[in-house]
Image (cartoon, rainbow, N blue to C red; front, side, top):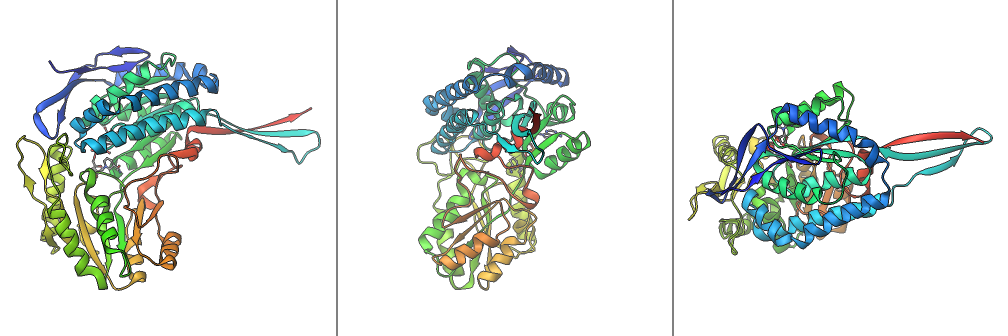
Length: 478
Ligand code: TXE
């Protein structure tokens, strides 16, 4: 019998109005479970519960918050293999990638356990005699968390953990494709001793549950990761009611490879950054910008490496690239392969739907030679599809790298300190990598982008305090 995942509202597990199925993208015959879809009324109940719990949690001691977060993080890490297997089964990244993500989620909770003990402030002398000025940080209130499917544990962790650490209450809406992971996380959080209403899980569609969170006057802040189109809608709606908002959207991340690069290292950075996790990372490299002197050698070595990648069931030991997450995403990826061909880009390898022993959403990783104006070189595809652009020299490569509406992450492979330093200063991105893949970041430092990729304060690390707290300036005359 399929496992059933319920919503968690005001400290109780509740059935929804309808149900949905969570599938295994590696094997469509394997149903991961059945989840309850909340409706607008249940979402509003969860919001009310979170609003009622604000005082109790906002006024709780940092020690209590630290203990709860530490317990959650420790349990996630202790159960990394089991949770990693669930994640690989539901989302389709390979087992080692999924176990890695699980450990990362656990570490994030433990990091913010410490941060709840380090909420600081300032005391300054006033410009007026006899007056003291204190600047302190307070919780924002009720935070609505709207998450995507591509990191089903890590992204919710990096939003829920700081929200709770800084004394906010939470209504969490996961993506419908990954409700088993969301439920598993909520189940762990439900046993951490939080008062009823402090943390709520509501599963369901973006149009109903997500929109209800975005529109509710009782939700003080929205943290969102997902597509540009949804992010823009959320930005308009939250601006209209002056709610705090943080948006993490797409990328079209470049990796520059210069003539002086260590070629083996550059090929590894390219392959790992573009294709691992099936290219479904917002920090994935999708444009390789290669200096003319090494262009042909780079293309031939990446093609050989990509040809040899083993695409298969996410839980099989020798799989390097798992399936695409859903039939819709697979259709989108394949349609971009068609678009690339039709606009005159040269397909060097891959880009085809594949069959395996089990029925799933498999495709071969694709490598194109493209021109900067091609849509496949400009739009986020969010799958294992990358293109190579030829650059005359470093300056040309940098200008191609910056010629995009996005600005999440960017990388360069070079042995020149001068070029690497210039790149770090002049690349228009929130994160810059030298001789490293664009995807793969630490959990204790800020994460986020510029231009069309992100909006609002950074996520992760101690910079998360900017979003999850509000500042008060108090004056005392004594
Ligand atoms: O995103 P959506 P989807 C990109 C990627 C992918 C595309 C579509 O290009 O192909 O987005 O993915 C909720 N009000 N990224 O459909 O729709 C929704 O239920 C409030 C990049 O998954 O943006 C889900 O929980 N919420 C990205 C979340 O928003 C709404 C990661 C994201 O869904 C809503 C994922 C609404 N009106 C996809 N409509 C990255 N950059 O990491 C939907 N939602």
